[in-house]
Length: 257
Image (cartoon, one colour):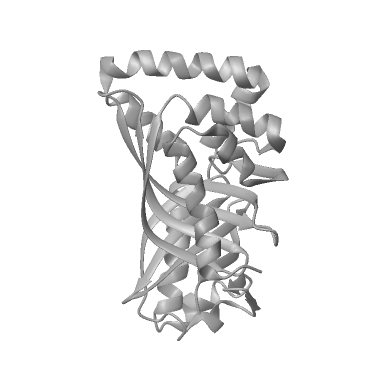
């Protein structure tokens, strides 16, 4: 397996290819069966043909700038805590808070790229641009239908379905319980499966003392997940909280030890 520096180098090639509008280089980063789930909750794109159509629809027409805050390398995963700046036109520039999860193969390709961001929030941001956003919105709709077809367009729209505010509230309660001293609050999450780094641990109580002064921020709801930025001084992590039928079932904390 590659070193931390090498893994980050692989990941950095993605925004570099996007900035250069180099479709061939961007596609070459992925394994032959690599997938993109962007946003998480929408339909998955897999393989060169589908990834190519994804690129033509969402990347090629725009100028996209990545503004990373923290990069976390955890086993074969690189989690990026960042904001994405999307310039659709000079008058329509979007800022999208995001957690980007890259799953890497042993031979230095991207097995999966998972983009955790909130589709309804971005649509509201586009709507706030008023008249200036109308041409861009119409062009995006036309590209969606041309490159993805009706089923693909509906698949993208599935990104609107999320655990939403209720999921964020539960995730916040989980981390308040973990970093607090009230055992009764922690007991409410006794059945949650927890993974710390690359290690599966038993129960939320194990997290006490590992990140006890962590501040949780930037809660993002996408699909069945809520991702959370965690900071404790110079230590940074991103937690991925998974829900099933509205119940928190799994928490994975991506952190470097």
